[in-house]
Image (cartoon, rainbow, N blue to C red; front, side):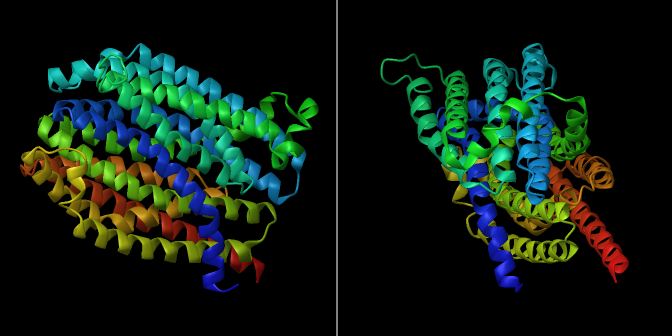
Amino acid sequence: MTFRKEAFITWKLSTPIILGELTQMALGIIDSIMVGKISYQQLAAAALVNSVLNIPFVLGFGLTISVSQTVSMANGRRDNLKVSHYLYNGFWLCTIAAILIAVALQFSKNILFHLGQDIEVATLGAPYLQLMGWSIIPMMMFISLKQFADGLERTRTAMLLSIAALPINIFINWLLVYGNGGFPRLELTGAGYGTLITRILILLIFMVVLFVHPFFSRYIAVRKNQWTLRLHTIKELLHIGIPSSLQVTMESGAFAVSSIIIGTLGAVQLAANQIAISCASLAFMVSWGLAQGASIRVSNAWGRNNWKDINSIGKTTLISGIIYGILGVLFFVSFRYALPLAFNNDATVMALASVLMLYAAVFQISDATQVIAVGLLRGIKDVKVPTLYIAIAYWVVGIPVGCLMAFTFKMGVTGMWIGFVSGLTFSSVFLNYRFFKLLNQKNATLL
């Protein structure tokens, strides 16, 4: 198969995933933009809460990845009964994890006051943290169903629902954040209610779609025999889910901890960081969606024991990631002054954010290629060693380098971003080396 055709298949599968992830990410960014119009303190409070939430959320999110991987593998073997069984067990595993995370967050609401942050920022963020904590439950339930559909390469379903969530969230925020339509003006707390209500609505709609859509009927029809919780299946899901959780938690956690560290430098630096990291995160969602699409295709090929396809998918996806990273560099450099204007109009915040955009540009290629390598390795069920590499990249290289530059060399928030660049580059080099080493070893045994 030619490079163009192979890449087209992966992009076709990945594009709905990308759009779905972008719209889910946009829910948080909408909150930041709408409250940022009120004051940069509200923006900083949203940034603080999102940083704290990031670690427990992605810990749970990693578990959902096991659903798409197992479903894709079973689908590659044309085992519809097993697909249905993974759906049921995966959904309840993710639901229980979400409830535990949400309850833990309710008991941790005062953590904002013990992170060395501006007291006004922490006070504004406390009720928002509680509401966003509860919203993790419908969000993770939705994502588990999304991973099921994605594993079947039915990626458009969740994408359409995610897109529909945007106008709903904007309208509810317009009512509750600004106090329109006779509703009370709740500002950041109103944004929390908006996200919670929106996530509940799209979950309920997705559940209805699964039961009435003809495509999913073959998996729903066998639920009488397959919808039973089994310890062996839960262990199988956890075998993939726990390392995947650790991977995304260590990466996202590093960024979250870095944001908390930046918060000790002041509200202006935290607000500027939030703007830059929000833009970088949006760009990352394209790479993440591409990695997810490639991982699903590789997992399907792995289920068929087709290493020729795995080789082709891996190489074309990596090249696509490099091309996308180059485009990302050009975009961030070109629009480093324009993008911050969407979030805040404080001159000091915007000036600092425009500088951070240049650092975001520098790591675009590394960011794209490292997440693609993670997805490819996950597709061939190699999760333990990559987890170690990721731990070293962010917690031995990234954060220490960032703190050294920020505090010892007095570079402030820009120093932390040098740490981001260092960690992502380390991760990209070693993870890609790992994938192609395993690929070459397997190809050698087949000769």
